[in-house]
Structures are given as structure tokens and as C-alpha cells.
Image (cartoon, rainbow, N blue to C red; front, side, top):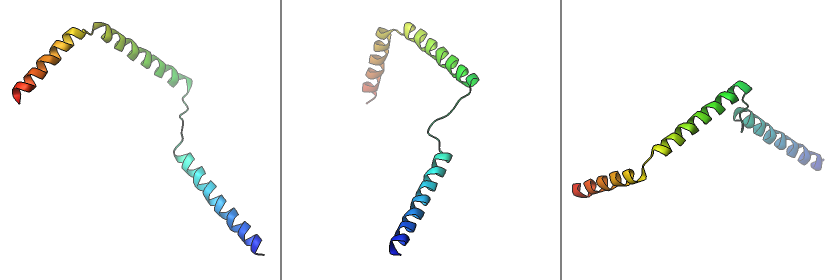
Length: 80
């Protein structure tokens, strides 16, 4: 009789734990499923952002940036 009671208690506890895990996973899914149209829009947006970034990097002048950085550091030092 005691063995059946222990098995019953363990079974109830496991069911409670599994139920909590199920509802937790249902409320907070680990992945998002997109339809094809949304996927295509996201791909186009990422491609556009990548092209913008590449064009900005081509226009970026490191020497000019270093000069500006040195000027701002000198101004900060003078301000102290």
C-alpha cells in the first residue's frame, strides 16, 4: 500500500512539473515562425542595410577620423 502511495505522489508531482513546463513553453516560445512574405521583406531589409553600410564604409576616411579624434582629445585636455 505504501509503494502505491509513493508512486501516486511521484506521478502527481511529475504531472504538475510537466504541466508547468508546457504552459511556460507555450507562453514564451523559443523560436518565431515567419511566413514567406515576411521572410522576404526581412531579407530585403537586411540586404538594403548591408548595402548602406558598405557604401558608408567606402566613404569613411580613417585619416580624417583620426584628425578629428585628436582635435577632440586636445579640446578635452584643455578643458580639464
